[in-house]
Length: 73
Figure (cartoon, rainbow, N blue to C red):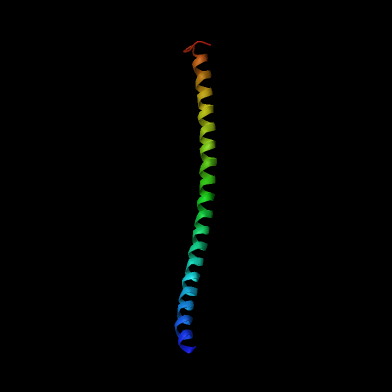
């Protein structure tokens, strides 16, 4: 029985060590994914704001063109 223990215990210790490393890597990936989601949310908000500004510029340009009689009303 000692021979089996001598073989199995080191294998189980190796597996336990590998699982510990995988848990750390998964934890790091989860943290990275959280940061990516936060950045994407920020980028989406900024893009929305830029689109709104662009819409306002378009409306202002149309009003200016109408005032200068550059386009038909």
